[in-house]
Image 1 (cartoon, one colour):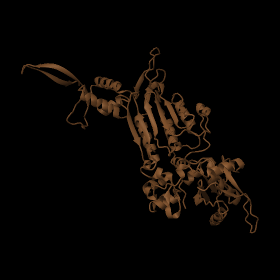
Image 2 (cartoon, rainbow, N blue to C red; image 1 turned 45 degrees about the vertical axis):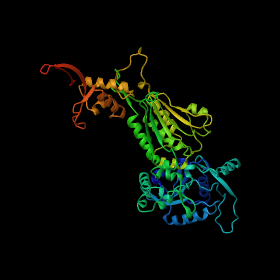
Image 3 (cartoon, one colour; image 1 turned 90 degrees about the vertical axis):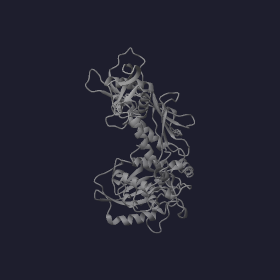
Image 4 (cartoon, rainbow, N blue to C red; image 1 turned 60 degrees about the horizontal axis):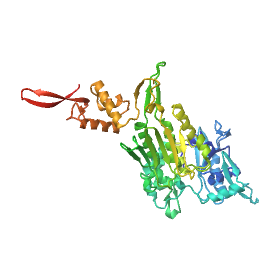
Length: 528
């Protein structure tokens, strides 16, 4: 059975953090059984882990060239492993896949967090017939090490038995057919999984079973929640308001407010929302300085910081709370709100210092999919990256807020000061070339008229570029439409709106006497 992840990237720890990977030089039943049990217990809800047999380790990383396993031994190891897994209580069988990397045979074990935790296994695994049975113990992961749980950890582990993460639970209100074959194949292709080729001809149930997206008894198989979140076109039908809303609020009164709603599979709605923000919200300010040849370029908000914050919101929000992730854009800030807040292992002091290191994740499977798609970091590096990007952009530091009950989490990005309207004119500012600064409709109206008067006439795309925008956006289009309606500007070819030579001009109303008819007419002229 193939494992739905790219093996080369797994080996080099590109998509899975080192704490979730263990390397074993050869088949040694006792420590490997302990590690399987620890990953299955998934004490920190990280999503289990992977064990790679035939790989030597050096300081937590694989040693090259790979040692590999004897090809003739692969079949024996798999059969022996199945027998040894019968010693785990309750019984747990990992997913096994022999793979060939750099001409070496290795055996990869995928050990997702188990549904029947806590698991325990023998402290010593005897191979001799008639040997005395060993006591059994609970094992957990601490960092990158497998350890035997102490009494306190045992009690906590038993308590976790009733707490399977929501994204890893069976959904009894859905059918396996609710997952789309095309979405499953697309994902497997994107991550470079060996399951991709077979997914094109196999049934949804077979592919989803291999991906651990199906659960329940054989007579009533049902999809796991995460399968509906990533492989159904409208997951919000199963998890209301599992969507992203981007609200552009240029005025506190709500005048001119625009709202965009992004639905669909979680990875798609995240990409679509980020694409919209990158094209229509993120703006660049270019400043020419007298003492240097290069222009200084800053952004109202650095895209990479926004991308990381929104990705983390998808990862860490609760899908049992029927509220969307909301991105609110105002003239002085951007706020990303998700529910609930961080767990209590993150203190108020941590928030103040912008050091958010979670010891346990809310959505272990969502994190796996996003990491394999390279959409989140997953190594507690998200917050440092956000802080770094804001600093490099010359922006004020981000602000992280929650309440005493941890009912929400708000990330606030102050807008770069270059985009704020300057009220203090005592200091002479460097001259700016073009700015794609956020403006209200009245400001845009005046700038449009000034640009047209200066140039004599522009197409709509030329007008957008003249004002510092990459393309014509909704607000600018609406302003032009209003000016045309008020006859302050006119089209060169009003009867051919889509003409390639179409331009906009300022109009002037002039009184002229028609002496031949003895009448006084109002005639429109363009200032071209």
